[in-house]
Image 1 (cartoon, rainbow, N blue to C red):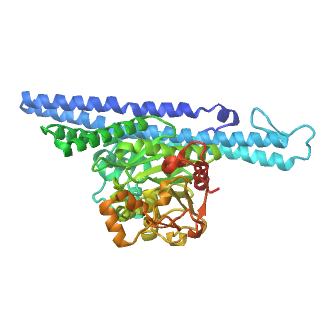
Image 2: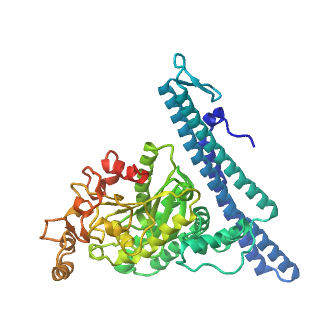
Image 3: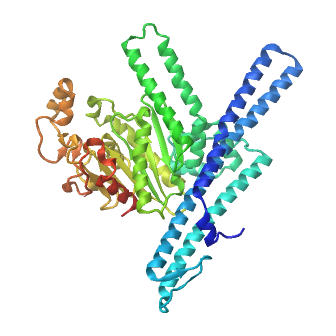
Length: 525
């Protein structure tokens, strides 16, 4: 295979590869419809026809339906491959641009074929010439590695099309909640055909295992999207069947409608967008849980995990994902030559009411799952370890703090914004490298008023005035918040980055220095 050259990389169009990948993924809809039509035809035949010929026809239709459905994960995989290629080419082009800019500043000439020489009147610029040449080579090598990796994966898909997409794996599956290192070892021992069989036949198992690569989890969870939506529609039909619905049913109807709207908006984002989204978990039960990565965390240099706070659920998951996206966009602006990914981790039951948010119980319940997820990111990552940062907002900062203190987090840095306390009295309790606990609190964030009260006062306030309980009225002094020492106070032992005004939800607003601060922490700046 010929290596990618200077002119080829300049001419490369990452956006075109993304469009091509989306076209492959778009074929999953027609495939699913055809499979449904075959299932309907088989059902009608069974009702009107019997005998040996009818049995043979039913078997044949079932086989055709199985062949169609087995193709779907491969279509999603083709999209993943091309999206990954697009992302890596974009980084290589950014490095190429940076090298040429460096050459211009040093008076070094880069010709149309990528040759490098000293400019007129700069005969002694050998060191600059060597530096520019090395930077160009690094950009071209990165593009070449990306091209070869994509070609190898597409070749494997083509071979599978001839020899069979899937084959059953040996018995035995890791238990739910198994250590991600064990899950990764089990997955690595399977052939590509066995992995595809598992994705197609046991998507609920594959999609929920921390330690399985993001690409496979994404394929599995996308296969479940239709079933998850059907569950919500069935719940809505059951509620509508109650006549009269009653106040409780009416509230549940509104909640189901909100979750359906959130799921539909999330599905639209999964179908299009840059960077590509990876669906790593989805459960519509309760308030709804979802885990989505923007960009492939298994191949990124920097990975952010964002844990939202109170009232977060499936209904507003697209909005929460938008916050993670804004941090990622700022990372790309500050470091276009690096590959970053951002994950929305909403795999816990966030409090809906102030009375719930006044307790650390839901944060403690979430700790083990967040610990496993971060361990899974480490286990499934390819190449040198990524810098992993975990960001908690509002009650989500308590989730992060409790997980770090009680379970440990595979994280190089922790960030807390708009925090009511993180369940610790000092940054040293959180188990990350010194100097890598960061926090920000807006000057007009109401959470700054969340002061503690004694246990007798707590119970009285919770019973009579939940808002007063969370705000700790009448105590408004000191650096103790509802769940411990304010992490944005220098006395906590962490590091503080500034935030402009914007209230409790303004940290991601354009122009807020907090957004820049979050991106710089993710990048390790």
